[in-house]
Length: 131
Image 1 (spheres, rainbow, N blue to C red):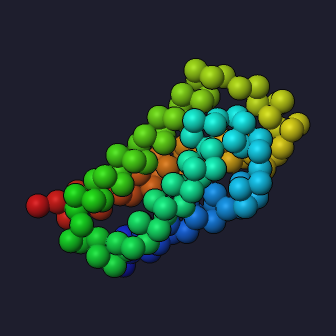
Image 2 (cartoon, rainbow, N blue to C red; image 1 turned 180 degrees about the vertical axis):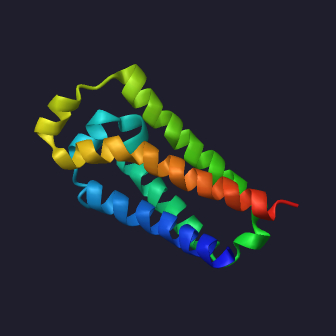
C-alpha cells in the first residue's frame, strides 16, 4: 500500500503544478482569474503550485508525516468548499463560461472533484499512519 500512496502523493503534486500551469496558460488565462479572483489570482495559483511541491516533498516520507498529511486533507477540503460555493452560491452561467473558454470551464468543473479525490486519499493515508 505504501508504494501506491507514494505514487498518489507525487500524482497529487504533479496535478497541482501542471494543472495550474496548463489551465492558467502559464498564468496568462485572465478568465480564470476573473471568474474567481479570491481563489485563482496569480498569487492563489502560485500557492496551489506550492502545495503541489509540498505533496511531492513528503511522497517518500509520508508514513512519518501523519499530522502534515491531515493538514493536506484539510487544505483539499477547503478547496472542495470553494468549488461548492462557486457553483451553488455564485451560480455562474456555465454556457456563457463555455462560450468564453472551454479550457477555463473544464477547469472550474473538475477542480472540486479533483480536490475531493486527492483529499480522500490524504485522509486514507492519515488513517493508515496516525499515531
